[in-house]
Image 1 (cartoon, rainbow over the protein chains, first blue to last red):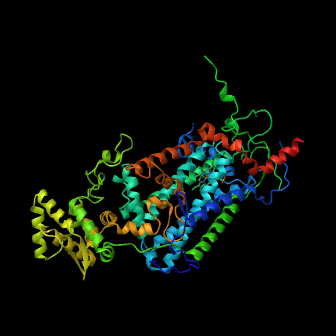
Image 2: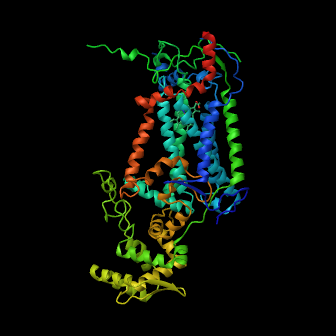
Image 3: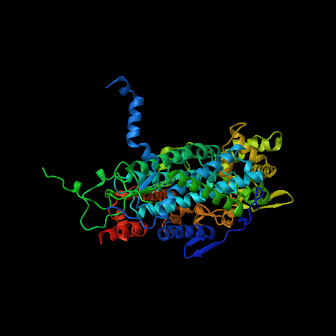
Length: 60
Length: 226
Length: 321
Ligand code: HEM
């Protein structure tokens, strides 16, 4: 049940939320995805090669 | 000192320009160690904040309840929600990155501290936004959060059940604070320059933070190679 | 006098080496513009793809229409002073000392700043504002003139028999409950008509933006919390970080909501103030990371920075060889 018309939402997420239970931990699948993406983004940002900065010398 | 030099205006300008000369404020070079994707999350956070504010301004045009009844309004609300999610997402990755660079070194601890305060302010801004939605979510969140805030004594003045008060905090006070804090945070980065890497060579370097703030000092003999 | 030698020693987690290396071209405005465009496009894409949640608000009307018995039971509690809001303490009233942080009762110190008298504000006041209704008026006068002991006797008598709802009206088997049956059934009718929603918000005049009273009343019943629990939003479900439906919520509150799940906080009557205190301490520690001896050295020890600045270290190495 939703107030406004969910116009534009190709994949509306306003169905009953799905949750992961693990011992006392309960987390929505949506939040879990967000957190996993955050960790993934962090790791990728660390290891992905940064473009345009190859083969440079530094004067030390 | 001449009369002109004694003026408040003149002194303020001198100090401002000395602290942040144009080539530090808007640099056109940067130290060559700045070569990682992790550096983009500060500017990404700032961009997301800009989109949050822009979409919030669009929501403000037709008033707080417009988005419930208009499909255009609902779409603008979706922009607002998702930009907030991106904002926090980028801010957290930015925080992790700065932590693992120990980016407070060399007299940059205030940059870190202002970052944390900005984070807190943003949490408050998001919270007041959630309770200003005027829907089921805001009913539930406000009646739950009142217990936490009342228990500290702050609820006597910061009444989360007072929708008008929360809306004002959400659209005026907290965004203003967040933008000001972000400005201070970013200006501090410009003043201090981006933190240099740990020195791994044997023997401690002789130079410490007292004179190490020249990472961005473009007046030094600098070597530019593209 | 001893001389302090430390101040000139290089502290690797506090001081930074001076940069004597090179600089490369950097277009800060272009970088900012690209970042903004990318974020804006990503926002539009997510908004088009997923939209955003917007669940209808509940109302006193919908509560009393769909769950009249829960509503009536809550009204009785407001009347006899046993509802959550009636027993709350500061900032609403003095019925309880409120939560304690060790020896400190912070809320009580600040005092009653948002006075709420549950019986008067939720039940008697709104009913008295109804025009006409001579029978109800008589019952209200009788109730207000009765001694507290008499009122308690009526309320006990009313609560002794179960309430039910059929054919559009509240049924109770109460005898010797004085004016209470009329009061509760009139309030239920008023609520079902929608007039109580209005009565609660317009107490401070024509214009209002303050929903303290209707929200407190709604939260005293079990309707609001049952809907929220169904949506997985309750405090003991890590609800603080959750959103209705399948949308991501305030994931950044994970640590705040975490404390409510573990003993002794999950059962403590002082959980709210204790969790708040824990979070304040942790927040201060986060702000002080640059000054905390062990924590600030972890970045150097974990060597994650070697990944970030790997090109720099590669260059240093090749120069030194
Ligand atoms: C609204 C939130 C924030 C915005 C818009 C923001 C923006 C920025 C920007 C644009 C920079 C420079 C570029 C870069 O290195 O990424 C920066 C640097 C920095 N930020 Fe933030 N930031 C925010 C929150 C935070 C938080 C929560 C922390 C940590 C607790 C933090 C700590 C730092 C530090 C220590 C630097 C200095 C980096 C260096 O010298 O290398 N910031 N920030």
